Length: 253
Image 1: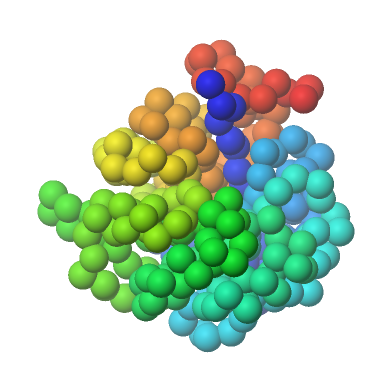
Image 2: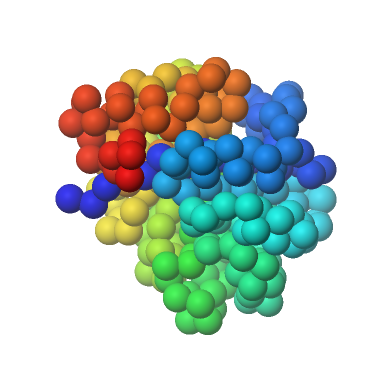
């Protein structure tokens, strides 16, 4: 069985790592390059950088930051926010990113996912999907959770897989920043819907929550607050998950 991935998430706004609740009330969490280097030293599997203001402020991914991160770490990292074209993705990849995340731009133009997969391979294309529960359905949100799309989430995930996405980064906006645990029903439904890896995001408040998400079918877990603010290390997470029978890389690997 493939090892499950522990992925610290670094939301970036105005050049700083931040963390909020429901994408708002942002709290500073440090310098992105310094944080990336810390998580690399601790043994994270990957990192995700999301420019959380790019989709509605209409500015491009900060390539200088990407270059500095690439010079500082040795683990793969994804960059999202401001990726609106094949050229944008190419610039981020040339700057040192291993994958690019697309969200609002893919909603505006679903063919963008296909063009990115054709140009760089599906393994480089992460489809980020922000979801809010409405009654008994999950609906897709755009522009950093500020815009309703009318898209039903599970159908959209299937479309993204068909278009060539290599994995899904699935964020529950209802749980984001609440530290109340991932939306496990959403995670499980998504894992049943698509055959590509699903990365659970939104709500991690304890190591038990990480295990719960893996047991619900996630291939990876995104977490921020427990690593940024709580003093929890990647080694702590690995030891806990291995004790729960979750296949993760050994601490010393």
